[in-house]
Length: 198
View 1 (spheres, rainbow, N blue to C red):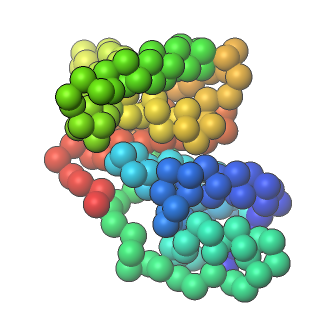
View 2: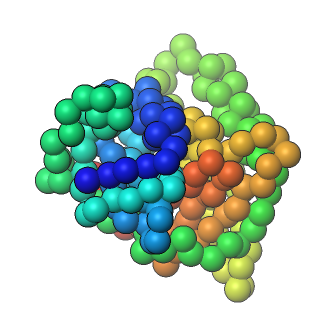
């Protein structure tokens, strides 16, 4: 079903996804010659993607915990294809802009400080979190069009550990109507406008 030369990278991907959602699903797909793609939907409507050296025989969805158990010598995970909701980006898209990973980290730290300060002021944590995640934290101009990068993409990039060291580069990408952030260790994508992933 799936084989990889870097199982530790897959374990880390699954572990981080499960910290955000204990029932996280992972979608395995062929990623070109000698490559396999892993996708997971984070609970704040962001797709996270990791590409590793290896093979995926087919497009299959499994539970993240079952995938880790299998890598550790357990039984092959059962398929959960019907539980996956939403479409994936059609390709990696084009690069609109590049920025230092340090800038992404500063944005994430500022958001965490804002959330901590606002707690206890009569606004529900979930409502406050959702409002913060929708905030636009970066504008990118390309081909005469202004693209807005919401905080949820930055948070997804950071929580999945994709940004890398402060000196690393993060790329803002566009695939069709979707925007994504690609770090040294993986990428995150927002939903297509007007479409819900769940």
